[in-house]
Image 1: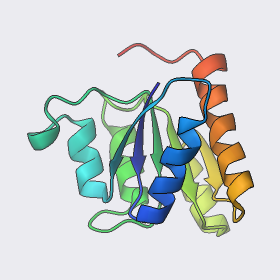
Image 2: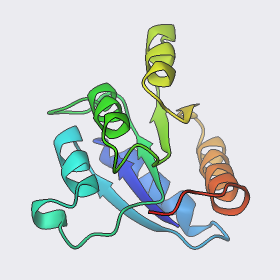
Image 3: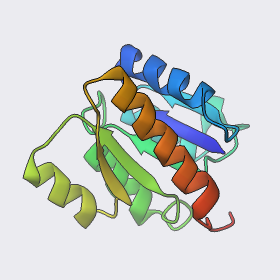
Length: 139
């Protein structure tokens, strides 16, 4: 399973990578740290021209250059990207953020757990669900 992680916090990005190493499902994770890079990666532009499209996207909301809300809107408006599952992975509990994410087409809204064990468990559950139980659209 190919995962694009859009996360500007290097510590959180390392946690995700570590959690996915322990997953029984083989994963390949690519990390970008701002919204502009995320869209270039998904559109296979510039330095990302040879990169494969991900199977799922883990998207933080608070990003530099272009925030996650804008990225989500652009992904879901693009006919070539709109079927990609976008999972919001954030620390924001604001109802406005949750409502906007779903209104813009997010597939789910995940809160970053505080504890390490819970963080790892959440990510393993995400990979298990999307890797074993969901039939994804072919590209």
